[in-house]
Length: 257
Image (tube, helix red, strand yellow):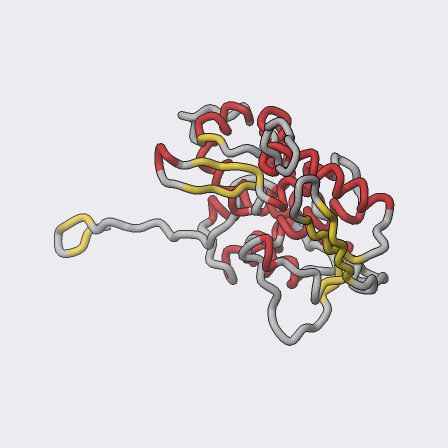
């Protein structure tokens, strides 16, 4: 375009923050990292290698951004010093395996709803998705996506919606909008399985158990007791996964833990 005899530079419309890849694709990458590295911290280069993503490819930074955006990974540092590891949410999904248990679906839902754009669209179509054309029109007209990004995100959103079974959840009215900024802030308040009770153990009383440790000291375990067999096994798997971070390898002597 010419303006006053000079070419005027046009800027491309920037789309809202959104994942370039679906939750399913990111869970598959996280699973590869988990198989190779457990929950240990590693450099970005090592993590990408474990996930079979080329460091110099255009896919790598987009995949890493989506893994962080869904909350499957945590990170620290910048540039070459950046390290990543499986987040608590990511570990929870890995420990549930690949089944479709209520616990795993709840974790997948938490991951999917980390993105505001997915939350907004889910609220709009909580009872089922319309056609791809309708979704794309909404992205273009209401969410101000650029056309190229909108076309791709329709597929990403639909696959994530179906993978996390978001259509099986209903939105309950709450005084405040739930936040999904970090693992500790997540809550099931305001969300319920369609036609059922909230997927939580709020009905069980929280009880604290003190466990004396060898050599002195004590550990405190707090949980909604009694636990189901499934949750007991889930906790045991978590301790096995976190053994490296919790245990120091040294020979025990009298009077020392």
